[in-house]
Image 1 (tube, rainbow, N blue to C red):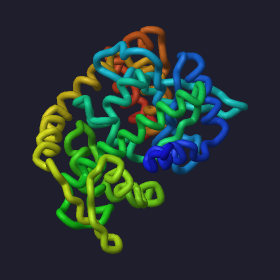
Image 2 (cartoon, helix red, strand yellow):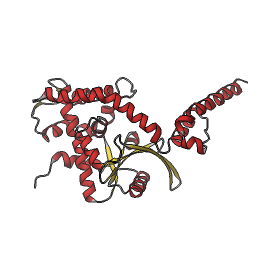
Image 3 (spheres, one colour):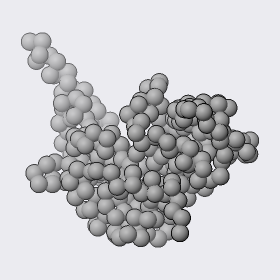
Image 4 (tube, rainbow, N blue to C red):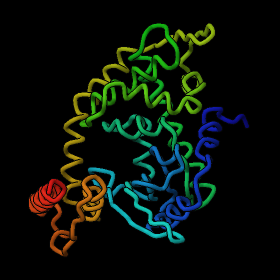
Length: 302
């Protein structure tokens, strides 16, 4: 049996080192939810830091429950005396796979998971294999669009840059100009050689001279038509997801309180009412923070 080189590379990448505290947190999340596996991603994966908020995707068996996914929650846990905080997205593995393969309108899954991630916990070997296959789909989808959006001839970075510039513009996100360059600069080892491998995995031929690639993109108009529909729906879909999250984000009040104290130095008391109604409580909390900061400023001047 000939092994798919892209799948083999993806599985190896998912096996990257993760600090023990993150693995313990992932195991706790996975076992308590009956998950197939837990993916860890974001800047903390690259740095190994436990500061800030850790980012996890919990992948469940069975059918997707929510129509607007993923379900987002905030968790705090102390592991061997180390306080950990995490933002956790939860969805069915099959929906994750379909989104990664470009079968859904959502762009965030394949755009995010063509970037580095680690399988921090898995239920068993079959689950590991299924999750690696889903993440490999993200690379195929991203590469297909990258060469459709990019120049006729260019380096792999030229194509990845065109892809990330387009996806950030399509989403309802505020990112600094040149964000795509920082992604590539921080993850050069991850992206090295990935584009040719992902193109070959789906039969897209190309020629190569040194670092320069000339892809033979058949059906470019079809791929761009596929993308235009997702680009048009990108911002409305992400706004809808944010609205949903504002009412269903489990632990939203605690997450917001931690963020406010971290950025302003002003602690926020979490009352039972604020815990149940974080959106309604927000104006009062912001007023409280503003008053306390003014008082601190007056004391500093005195």
